[in-house]
Image (cartoon, rainbow, N blue to C red):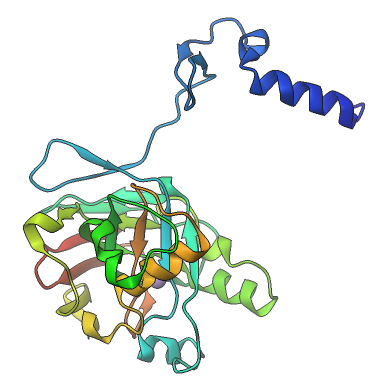
Length: 270
Ligand code: MN
């Protein structure tokens, strides 16, 4: 195949930017609306990930999934870090990794490929209805639309192996269905969460048990910190970190997630 030269690439890019996609469209391509000012041909529909909202027929569209690492001291230590010296750090999962978990149901969650050490991490999730850059911590909770219970599922063996090689740990964290999440509870109904029990059971045995007040960086501080690195937008959700005693699940296990003030979520690994 002949390599494309820079001039041709630039011309093609200019044509694309000018909205001349129709010239490239294959027969039978339906006309849709892409994001942007004008209507353009869209090759195919890409589903927009969403999470149901409690007490509403509307759904919450997910733009980005941010996750903080090592945000409870005891979990930080079990991962081999010193919680007293580490500034917050974040990673992302793809937005279509969300797997909505209805209240009162146990959903099936497929054991993913490649791993032999698949871990749960139970977390409080903040869903943003506002955005901004350089948001001060004192104003950060104003951005929060609501909260949910989430699982930051992790292929721990792959995460660790990549970390040891100083490679991105993407494959350990950012895979299909890696973010089971209960419905979003609007702040107007449940308020903000700064304390309260967070408990994960597997097959009715308590595995993780801590208090939200033990977070090293509060949800407000996380949002403030994230907003220095990224412009936050409505639709962003923030997994606020897991307590200690993360551990493995295998097919057949049922994970039950509890946070005081929210209905539990139940997920069966299959
Ligand atoms: Mn996590």
